[in-house]
Amino acid sequence: MEQQEQVIVVGAGLAGLNCAHHLAEAGVSVTLLEAADAPGGRVRTETVNGFKLDRGFQVLLTAYPEARAAFDYEALDLHAFFPGAFVRKGGAFHQIADPFRDVAGGSRTLAAPVGSFLDKARIGQLRYNVGRGELEDLWQRPETTSLNYVRNAGFSVAMIEGFLRPFFAGIFLEPDLRTSSRMLEFVFRMFASGDTALPATGIEALPRQLAGHLPDGVLRLNSPVATISSRSVTLDSGETLPARAVVVATDGQAAQELLPELVYPGSYGTACLYYAAPTPPMREPALLLDAEPAGPINNAVVPSNISPLYAPPGAALVSASTVGIPAADDETLDEQARAQMTGWWGEQVAAWELLKIYRIPEALPIQEPPGLSLPRRPVRLGGGRYVCGDHRDNASINGALASSRRAAEAAVADLAGA
Image (cartoon, rainbow, N blue to C red; front, side, top):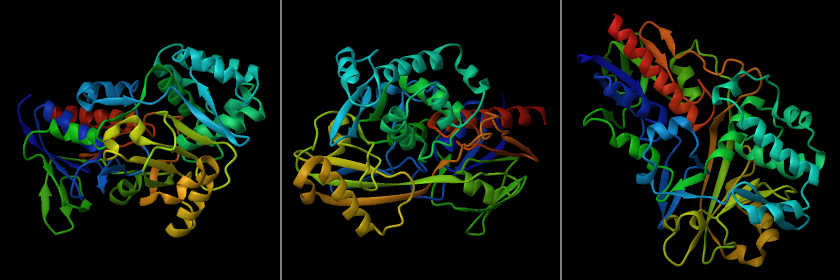
């Protein structure tokens, strides 16, 4: 394709970066505008006292098909989690493992006091059900809430409350499992068919790699956008940039502010607390879930157990996350989290240094039924305007990448036909 007039992409998160890459690959001249001082959007990593702090607990599911196409996994130097989780119940942590990838752990899972033997057999049945057929078939299955889905699958109250609710609440960032069952099936299939992983140097390696694919001069930082029209973008500074097409690749709330006709259902939030510890409180590279929470923390992990580069030598990094944004101020939230984790790991917690608390109100778009009855919302809005992001497909890294590819393909097709 011959060089086209410029397309402006607003927002250099994963969606915007991937969209700009696809446009450039198609021979389209593109400018990518980012309000912040670095690309990444919600996928950022900050270094504090030598520790790598992801802005909110995030992971990459390596089975995501769009991620496989977009990223060079070897260059990311991915480090995998234990395939399962440790669940806090009855004053102790119990291992729940994927028996297909951890045979020894499977026997410990059967003995764990989390649900019945029949419940654990139903986990295997769920794994089979979500894995059969083509991935696209999942988005055509009947849609209900995730809670109704697991109840209809025959899981006991003990299994739902002891594992499924805390596990999926930590993924969906809502405790009532109102999220679409289509999302539950998709996520469970991704967990079952690949690794849960972190790049060695932090989650920001994902947008850094995408940014590295862009031609020189495409990415423009510190450029917040005030308004857009069908043929231009006006920055907060007053500068107006003309374009034949504009793609809004921000989070849902910001997209709705720029494109008032968009219907955005809102977001769920989370808070993530990071602590520096002299030694790791556990050795396993695993996710911890509290099924009987005595405090605000839903899940925790020691990221330096996944990749040692998350902490300086001779130290450990502990991450603890909430479901929703706690009302407590940071000092109170820290006290409540420490009290809860002291119940897990004892008095060592008192000596930990609080590094930072991230409160992320726009962490994940709401996906309650019928939110995914149309699994791919339109990316072409008319008049040379397009939109992409995880609010247009599904609330995941895969969804952000998929919608951005679709938006780029739509813009390229329209430019070619104009």
